[in-house]
Length: 399
Image (cartoon, rainbow, N blue to C red; front, side, top):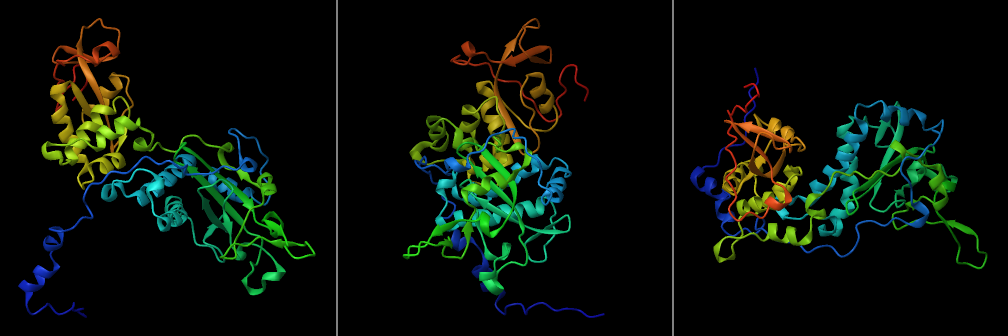
């Protein structure tokens, strides 16, 4: 038996331990200091008039794209998985837990460039797509590539994706197909399509020389965008324009409410992650709040604990914070609220109600509870909410 030895342990282990500890660096580190970000004034995405698309399109699937289209349509819950892969790709770059960022516009130029790579990587993992021979992907045994652009129609196509005698060895060995993807976090819109890349479907421009001939419109990387006329050649998956990119809650929140959440402070104007999370569940009620939002607001590692502690802090104010475990899904369903899954929470203001109150309600220890109505929201002395502890039995609900 061969025993593989590790690197020799440092002679002065105590000194080495001090050098490798984070303690000294953490004393002066500013990387995890909470910071606020301005509301973006510029739009994330451009949608040129020539590339506007509609929802619920009816298109015939081109024969050469049919194997790819059929493959995606045969994947379980493909559309849901696709839109969440787009959402997660952007959230990974925002990295709200460490940066506090909540909008695409907060990214650096380099990070924005990397978003396309993140989308491709996440889609590859989500759908377990094989590597291609000449391109990154192989679907249904055929090479295909994935292209992302924040601007609809702005995909940049490299030479290896299409046939062109003028390209020599840099040119492709075939006119390959491409999956073209787009999202706009400002409007919660997204789209995914497929198109066969050809030399003629890419942009050309007139030569500035006297002869005025057409020349290929390359960028600095020798890539070209699809021509405006090529839009008619794109087959749009799931009917074209999609309007349900998973919501970036902080991006779409009322600016004043967002400011109150992100600037919630303790004495001496020192912000507290727990204080901000508490304020989040005060401001955002009756709608699901995801883990990414809690991480961004708290800017700490233990988001679930912050949500649990908010539950304790807000109960005296009549607010419950429901999660995915124990009696909480039942309570959410009984109150007519969306039911959280793992990594989600929902808060609501409760008031005691009578058994014949028509609103959705649940009973605990003989007392009925319902969601506060508009006229009950401003009660200066709210009734503390019931303690929905882990082993609680809701009346009529089996243990």
